[in-house]
Image (cartoon, rainbow, N blue to C red; front, side, top):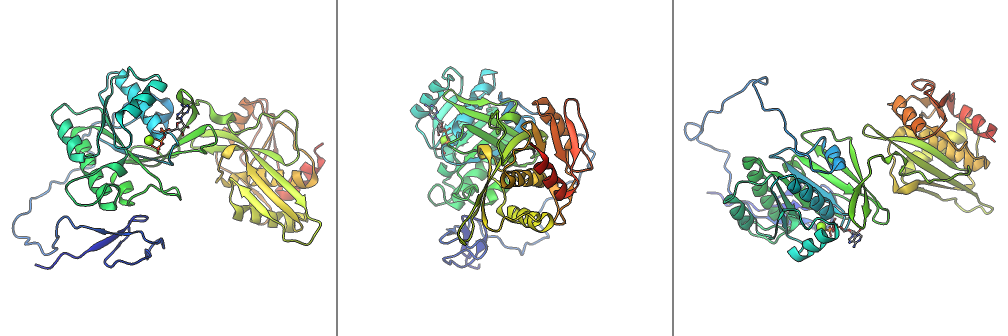
Length: 455
Ligand SMILES: Nc1ncnc2c1ncn2[C@@H]1O[C@H](COP(=O)(O)OP(=O)(O)OP(=O)(O)O)[C@@H](O)[C@H]1O
Ligand SMILES: [Mg+2]
């Protein structure tokens, strides 16, 4: 029989190569290739005349059980999951160190167990004493969770094998788990994959909702092989600036629901508090109008979130190359917008430094923010504040036209609800709503005229 070939797997992108090399040929990272021990040797030359079993085909409309979902007890968590956890599914929860993954899962576990669900919480990272201290701080010490500190997948599954399966099994984290089916230290690609495979198989066979905590690498991806993300049903990411109080829970992949909803939490001393109405979260509560500030009604899934965009223009006396710095928005898009403002409206930014900031640590990717950014830039350049209770949205094309955006009505209604009384946007799609007057802006030149005219 042929000798099994060695395979090397990149810990960053999961690509496979048959030869070790210092740099991954696919993602370009250095020192990320690790040898994988082949578990079985696979031969493609089956003897097809015996050994196989016939598989049954089914019709798509054959009767199926409707999807039942179980609430996590945290409405924001349920929302991000698309309505709760599905029994027999595997969820991977990624997030930066210290962002609050263990806190969130302990709170969810406590809520489920208090409602009578059996929850097993296995910590491979912290001693049980540490988890108990956290539970005490969060006021959850009386929740009937079954807690253990363990890192061996065989021990965990042997222990669970004797009891009726729990409703939920939390494993914190998959990088600390060790499977004795194969060699290697915990955290290596093959170990992470093998441990996850065994745990997921147990969860699927027994209808257990499995939550795996996953570390993230410095560029924000979940550490370990990319295949881990393929193996689970749901990939969640818990994000936020550690210096800010707000945390956003987002589904990156969901086999049981949409991925456009977010859950918003605030990290308090008592743990994570749910923020049911986050639309005002990223607005600075200022009372006086200032030049260079515009409010944009962003959308997170079906939820409007109003964010403040701030621009600062500094004229340079010397001939030094002016800086452009952007936080929370795409710098390429800023360069494009500045070019359109220069060439279509005759404004001059070439000798000025331009700083753009999206307040509150929020990141914008919606092209509808173009008009709000343009309004902030023109307002900063002309030193004319925009009206205090106004919002701006619309996509700017290279010709300087304002293009329509999705869900204009939703954005307008939310702004009106929060006390905004004026909106500027594209000619199509927008209209007055109760207490809010809508004005269509005809192109970027129209915007410049409007800003210059505002007192
Ligand atoms: N006594 C405290 N009062 C207020 N906040 C606290 C307190 N102790 C911890 N925290 C908050 O909880 C965070 C740690 O939460 P948690 O341990 O759940 O994070 P994690 O994502 O599980 O981290 P890791 O990746 O290290 O496991 C801290 O960064 C801090 O913001
Ligand atoms: Mg933790």
